[in-house]
Image: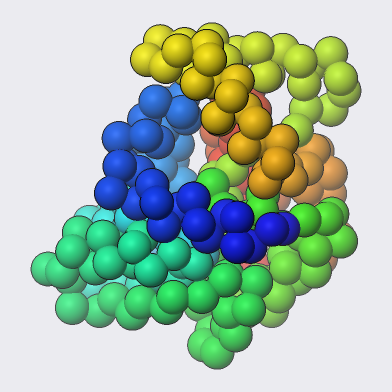
Length: 229
């Protein structure tokens, strides 16, 4: 991925990110809720989690709301995103912040949950994604989970066109066609490298994840992952 391009636009958009995301991602709140509710631990559990590409901390906040004794590590490439996450999560004492490309994150602990939202599609190639999923698997405790909420590709060109047209239709509710095509769709083709959801489920199973599943899906957005047994 073009890390500098991605970092620059997330640095610039950090203050407006929470507003922007609602205009770009259909049913974003539901997607986040499903991602977090799938973490299979009791509410008091002192689970250890890492949020890869944490953005402004929305997903981490939901984790800590559901699991108040959790220890969450927030990783993001953009300093401005981390700063907003720190403000959003300041009432939670067990949060670490790492300003770094998630690709270089060392996974220097064993985790009960590895989660990510709208970030891993920046991995440039399918091989990069498979290798990173393997690193995630290796970082998990037995019974730990990996769940990813992300943009995905359809299984064929007809469905992919359907996905893209639906995404455009959603954005037209609040954004002009000129902005959609000139900014957001252009960035999608320049910076994003989504993979077919069906391929990714197969990769996870081959790596060793059990109970691989799609928890939620709306056209080109999905929540999916599995469990380390």
